[in-house]
Structures are given as C-alpha cells and as structure tokens.
Amino acid sequence: MSYSHLDPSPQKKSSVLKFVMIGCAGMILLAVAGIGTVGGLFYRSTKKVDPIAIAALENIRDGNARAIYDESDEGFKASASYEDTVAALEEIHARGGDLLNWRRTGMNISSDTESGTLATFKYAATFDSGDAVITLVLKAQEGGDPPYRLYRFDVNDPEAD
Image (tube, rainbow, N blue to C red):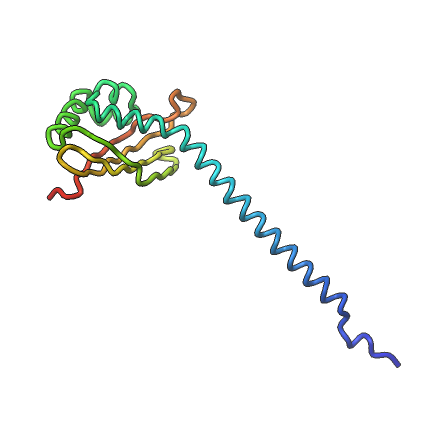
C-alpha cells in the first residue's frame, strides 16, 4: 500500500514558488517601465517649456512689457491689458530695482479639462533690494508655436508685510 498522495511533491512546491517569483519580477518590471515613461514625458515637456520660461524672466528683467504681452496666452490678455502689464513691471522695478539673477526651485505640470495643461515654475530671484520668489505659469497651446505661452506671473517678496 502506498501513501504517496499524502506527501506533497517537492516538484509542485517549486512550481508555485517559480510562478510567484516570475509574477513579482513582472510587477517590478512594469513599475520600472511606468516610472521611466512618466519621467521621459516630464523631461520632454521640460525641454519645450524651459526656453519660454527663461525668455519671460528675461523680459521681466528688461522691463519689456511689449514682449510679455504679445507673447502671452489669450487668458493673460483677457485679464490684463498692455497698460496693466506696463504698470506691473514698473511697480516691480520701482520696489525691487533690477532683477539680478534667478534660480529655478520648482516645476509642476498639471492638466485638467477646464484649464488645459499648465506648467508652473518657481524661481528664487535676487533684485537690487533683496530676494523674491517669481512664479511663472505657462499654458500649453494646442498645435501652437510656441507650444506654451505665458498665462500668469507673480513676483512676491517673502519678507513683505
């Protein structure tokens, strides 16, 4: 009489273990591929947006209201006239003096059905009078050239009352 059917076969344990290991490896591979894809898309978006953000900073530095206004998104133009843009730049330079340098401290790309795709850049900036934070919001243009346009900019003095 044989009772071999009561003893688990080592071969079956090995098959289950292999199946679990292959499944875990597959999940890790999918996770790495997903992270790589998202990182690649973020990098490609950054390459398209960076030159536009730098040009906007240079226009703020130079007080070039005409370029800021002409190169901005329609949403910017709907909320501020050319004269408003001139007044804002005059106020920035009256309070802060010359914009001496900047360093990007953050970036976020978000998308929704109401606003579209927005790229938000934050910069630590130095003016004659001290430090400030500049936030640029660029909006993606469908099939547009350039692919992003200035949607909003803010210059904030972190030490202001």
